[in-house]
Image (cartoon, rainbow over all chains, first blue to last red; front, side):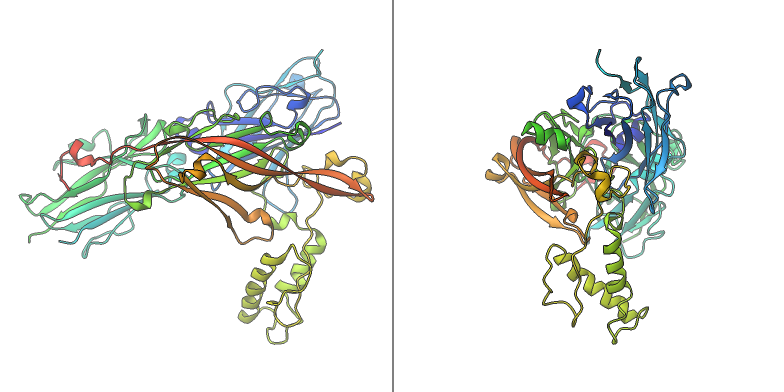
Length: 137
Length: 141
Length: 268
């Protein structure tokens, strides 16, 4: 059982100027030593095991820009493995998303991230999905 | 004659978020009799022969903004038909850096001369926006 | 160009400590991709610095380095979030309601002023326990402890974390110096700056660039990571100093007046 952090680094200016997260989102986790791949891209593949606790947080490139994760969408057919939920750091208005891996993954589980950026009225979502992967066979 | 600085301040994240310069552009100058200081509708009072510098700042220093061009509109503001204040943002490619320093031509008759600011914020399909709200008010010497 | 450049230094702290080097566990990302930076979110970032002046001397280019451990609590959290309950109580007792100071009743403007003055003293000396000569009267700000937390910000008691140092969030990586070719050749002038908060986390490294020195230059980041170990049943942190080379590419074009392109005014 491990605690795994996934940091979504967002180029807010780039995402707003292009209306897409492609090329403006860099996903990183701290589990490369155990087999995560595609670090620093928008299709990060995070290696997970049953019982692992995952936390998703955001960091913006322009440190005064606002960004938060509005949603993590996982197809309901994968609900037996994972159901991410939004949480708030106690006593603050800073949010994060968290999930516990309920069952060892025998298939890759793709997910999509939706972000709230600066004062944009609507969310902006990833167009290519990062993945969660089970243990290497 | 004293040089006039026209300073434009842009809320880049606000403008990119809303897709409009409306309420995200603030213009001031150091001329003696200008109107609408601090708004998008600055009317800069000047004389023929007077030098003017246009300067731009982003409100958040880590965000990018530059003046791509300054175009004076004709009387009917024809030029602004497609590039008005509320036009949709358009594609911006590799940035070109220019200073914008000019002298009000001596042959210019007195009157108000509206101009269009073309601004670029970053690079991409929504990175260029226009404001045709500001003007020069050329006085008689 | 007039935009300040930010270079995020993302580090997989535990993996870098284990490997004894940063190369495979560091990812650099800057906000200058739109003007030509390459290698974003890899160890091979080359930051584009465009020195073309469009205003005046004010156009001096500024670089800011921001280290971030993958696994850090978000840096957007307020600093007070990181304080232990005991430290919060201390601040409340000493700064917010300094009842012990008879000349400054709580809630008055004078009290607020005193609190501000004392706060700046506290900032300067949170790391030291001895009384400050600058403290007002007998007032003494004790050491402010940071909370021990996991990545959800939940407090970790001694028993819960025992034998499992991995549960702790690592202290944020620190940049301790910037040296190398770009510094030796006077291309960049780095220095550490402070901002007024209660932790050394308020310190950051920044540099101005002499953009007349066109070309690609290397610089070396000196980074300290902290490795947890157990000592007398408590977690302690051992500093691990590592270095890493990154690059800037300085370009500079002649300044051109836009009115030469669009001659609607006489170009000055």
